[in-house]
Length: 322
Image 1 (cartoon, rainbow, N blue to C red):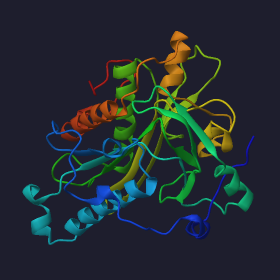
Image 2 (image 1 turned 180 degrees about the horizontal axis):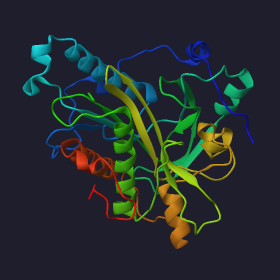
Image 3 (image 1 turned 120 degrees about the vertical axis):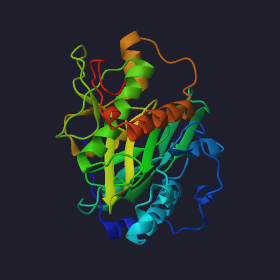
């Protein structure tokens, strides 16, 4: 089993390339991806990329721009900041990242050998993707984040959802730290249940969305990873859902084989494609439309913003989120 990966902030800065351009998504004039939403402003960045892949740094730059705007608004005099008409609307960034390993803020230093193991050439071959990738070769990036937890991976075949919002905004019922995390997980559970018939559960000890149907010898496996950060109640990061990302095979094509996901020894990673193939013994033949799935997730998430009773999900199908 490969060694657990850790990385210090100083080492990250040594391997992070210096910024050479401004992300094209940083402009507030870019179009919204879900114009039918009444409150939430959703931007699916992959719609604006030629191959549908977005550099992690570009998405992070847009996230920090939006977050700075929220924090600036919160620094205004109390009278102005408490008027709903003056409040910034909640935002959602969704994207399909270029191959990137991210690490938690408290991880120990990564040795040069560990870093080299993660940054080995990665072959990506996703023929059922909306914009197919045929034998593409990538050198994964490594990035330090301000979330908790340990190492995880973002890449082709996965949708990343980053809401940027004020948990104490007067535009909707307030969130606590736990209720906000639960809303992210529950929205993902609902999407999996309604779109694919996949039943899931969540654990307070191990964040994210999990599958353990009892009918598989594979045991418990994670289909979505959760990692969030709050600053003055303004959120960053979020949840990443595995759709068609490789989850089996050797480290040449399976990015998860290079490390222990989130530091959880003995736990497996899965995807929507893997679960459906296991259930039906057939592979997906039509293209995965991640843009459509992102828009559907955004709609479900907004419903929870507007109605706090829809921030939780009952996996039996009788949940309040319906």
